[in-house]
Length: 316
Image 1 (spheres, rainbow, N blue to C red):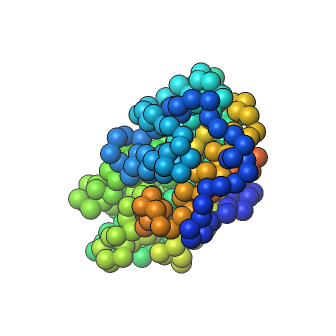
Image 2 (image 1 turned 90 degrees about the vertical axis):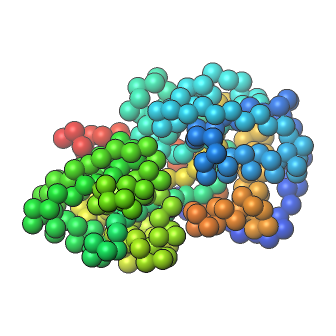
Image 3 (image 1 turned 180 degrees about the vertical axis):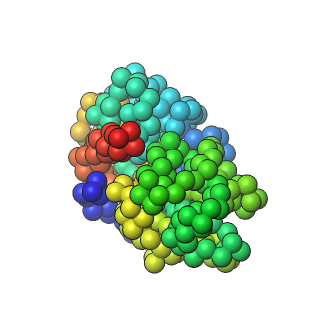
């Protein structure tokens, strides 16, 4: 139910040069304001800025980065929606911003009010716990909850909190869900013992590799790279997943040639293994995932509609 109906293209092309016909045929009419939905200095902000730097060096396009944070990317989307659609304003957020977050904000906007340009990477989103606690999978955690243990569950977004609630309902248990701002904060809380388990979207990799942390379940529609045998949400009675991607978008109605040029240019950068940004994406997020054009527009629309179904399931 509500599984992705597209095939993501994972690119890994060495020495790829940005020289396609669509990019040669289109040039932005002025400097490009790049809105970034993430705090300055963080990994996502760094990713956005490095991509912009590579495009400046390769194509001569001028970018003006600007942080527009808050409300899970909705503040960025509200600002971007009022900007010119001629290619001089784009934004980087996550697909959840255009789905659950936008829908729950009642901002008078939908995913259809934006032009999809390209994704850059997905997330290794997992329910993570400490190896020392002895739990192998989320089934063990649920069994402990049924025996009366108070399970403190870290969540970094309302969407994930809803999924934790549906897991409770499906398994006849109750978690003490604690809200945090960002997966790194959840991971810090797990390591500190402030919560027992929590949703984390990639920073857990080092701890998992070291044996200090365990991925108890995949929050995705597919197995995790590091722990492919971990149960999926469907194995835990939840008919929804938390698939998501970093994504560049523009205002509604961008010219097709601009949409294509941005999409191809961004995908070329994040698929070049010689670049610093690609090495970061490979290390933290398991490799580049580039979805563009009408396929991306459909993905964003499906995410918006799927958010409505998730909210309805929680409120039944």
